[in-house]
Structures are given as C-alpha cells and as structure tokens.
Amino acid sequence: MGDGAQAAVFCVHFGLLRRERRHQTRLLQELIAAHVPPETALFVAGDFNDWRHELGEVLRGELGLEDASVALTGTTGKSYPAYWPWLSLDRIYFRNATPVGVTIVRLRKGLRLSEGV
Image: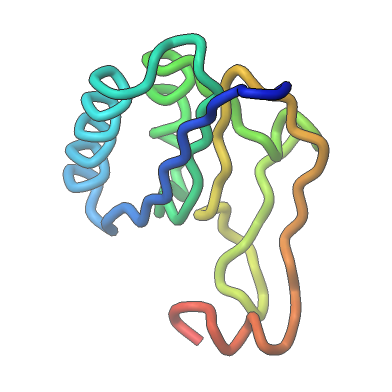
C-alpha cells in the first residue's frame, strides 16, 4: 500500500455454534459489501472458532480473502489452547495487500490473557 492508500480492518470473535458462525459470516459479508470498495485493502482478523475450517471457503469464495498464515507458511497456525495449541481458531484474512509475516506470539503474559486459561 502506497501513500494515500486506504485499508479496512475488521476484528471479529465468532460464536461457538456452527449456525451462529454462519450467521456472523453472512453479516460480515453484508458489512463488507456495503462499506468496503472491492479495490480497498481489507483485513479481517480474530477468533473465528472455525476448527473445522468451514468458513475459510466462504471467505475466500465470496469475499476474495486469503489466509495470511496459509499464504506465508502453507498452513494455518495453531493457536488454541494457548498452553498446548492444537486448534487453528485465530486467523488473519486479507485481500489487496501483501503480508510480510505472521507469528503466533507465545509469551507468559499472553498466556494469562488468553481466554480459557
């Protein structure tokens, strides 16, 4: 992104139930369609609670988003639970941008801040 470039950023925390996540995904799609021009850099990050990797298809197909971790490392990063992560719940999606790095921060203080710990 160069001088004067604009970006839209959404931070989300989706629900635990499948139908709840699907509804929240539809709302997100509607918000983006209504407020973010297709050429604008877009970032959607947060806790998607998408351990089955179902929402990624919708976000890629409907919104043209890419998973930053997959783009840079070839796989989704495992982030939950914080002490012994084995699920990929937290994601950063983007479009019209070039990610330069992605890291799951593992600090003692961060572990205490994580939900469920």
